[in-house]
Length: 178
Length: 193
Image (cartoon, rainbow over all chains, first blue to last red; front, side, top):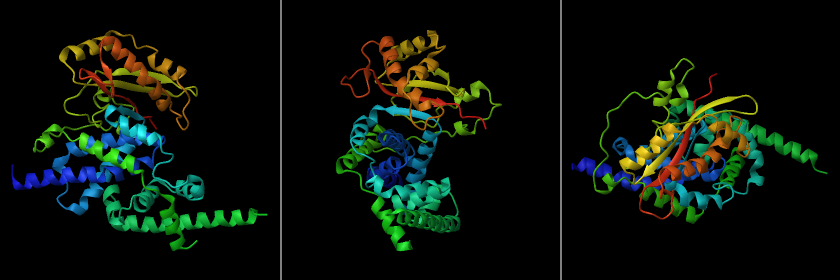
């Protein structure tokens, strides 16, 4: 085996387990019931291993590459496909014990979630990947295959909308207080 | 609300996954590593063939095209195999028609196992199967197309069907080294605009 192939093999072997929890959190925050995230993770892991030859040469590109694949798995799932895998059985059981995995006490943040739901899909993706999954805006642009500048401007516009929505909610809540 | 307050709100809104779940996710990553990679070799490079993405189907496509495209995107362990498709068609209470195809994925299979199961699928009259699953399935929130309702009812039905066709088959993580069901799944034809 060439040194280059060996290097790629060892990098993918490290990267997949390292990023698996982040991918699980990504799914858990976006699907309901959240324990289905276990199946989507299993699906994504199988694809990642299978596509080991396509692992980006640059380490900085690995995370967007993985999230890009995870996003496709999620989109396909949302297009009414379902798959239950034995591989994910144990993880699914564990996930079902956790209420809203990946999120803090939901009632406290209902307004935030409501405001995010009002954004269009692309803006929700940008906000979620950046704020929840910790990807930089450059990485987000790779995942969504959008221009960096477009992601930045959409991100700032989306934040502005969220601030506006949340300020309106706070004001109406304050006005409603006795 | 200023920018800092919004950032603080975002930070506070998420929580890390429990350590036990994180450990299990890492274990799953390790367990799914293909034998070939474990042996220190990279996956075989495959011929790239044109694949029709399910979501891009249009009303004019033939059924055979649709069937070919049902699950190319759903990967499985190299050593597993899938059955021929099982038709799952149903009409929801609101009159929405769904045409789906289900499958069973086997591990530790032999030609005779697969042949037995495929023969059973082929010789079964599936008329009304999907409708029965829908009619008897429990309602699921945010499931206007009924796929999740049918999907929930489908899993145990396919387990029973497979057990009848392959006596001794184990299901998911039941103990047993022989032939087992590793997954079941269903894909539905996308709605036409």
